[in-house]
Image (cartoon, rainbow, N blue to C red):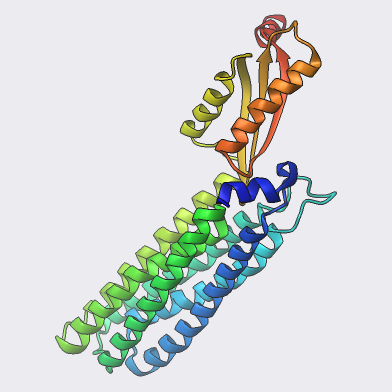
Amino acid sequence: MSAAEAVKKDIPGNAPGSVAPEYERLMRRATLAAVAVAVVLIMLKGVVFWFTGSIAMLGTLTDSLLDGAASLLNLFAVRASLAPADREHRFGHGKAEALAGLGQSIFIFGSAAYIVFEAVRRLLDPQPVAYSGAGIAVVVIAIVLTLALVAYQRHVVSETRSLAIEADSIHYRGDLFMNLSVIAALVLSGYLGFHWADPAFGILIAALIAWSAAKIVINAFDQLMDREFSEEDRDRIMDIARQHPEVVNLHELRTRTSGIYSFIQFHLELDGGISLTEAHRISDEVESEVMTAFPGAEVIIHQDPAGIEKLTRLQRT
């Protein structure tokens, strides 16, 4: 069974807040895996920072601490977002993911500022880095663990379109570049005597962290402010509706995303002389085509007699 078929089968009527069981398992496992990896990396990097005193290592340790906090926040946010719709939340709880993303960004910006502060202090008072070999070994382990986690997260995001998992994955993808920077800093400072390299790379790491946070904020705001689908997806919806031989036109297309849920609604213009039963049949056929193209989306269609929109505009003027 394909992912699209799974969604359509396990979300009766595409009700918001109802998630295919395999999607739910994937998202829960992804959050637990992120927390587990963060805990392991925090312990390893903490020990090495204690011995090396490297600012670059401090940067990646701080990032791992924040990754752990953010991943823990994600774990609870994903559980909340997967809760089915209720009387107070008819559209489900998907926006809990966007709120978690904003919370993560606050942590991340704070960590970037702290790393810059420590790096500037070390630039003014350069110090050699000790135990560079141990630091490099730990960073290599961190890269292997992070690669495995990112690969799994990307699989989960491709299946579920989860903003919270995507936000978590952005951190860890950034960690790969940070870890490579740490290796460069440890080699240049510990073996070649370029003591300025350690704090310089620390600042570079802070910039990468801040850039990751900015992308998370943009994605979260798009969901919280009900940003429309891309123009490409909106054109696709309109093309699907207009391809039906009995559809005259459509208007008032509105789309939005909430966590892993999507909502599509529009007015379908039909021949004003057909029966309500025929109009309902045509709408059901168009709805089925749109749901095939956008699996898991809730589609709401209002039927209008053709030309009613133009008549309404004339009456208002």
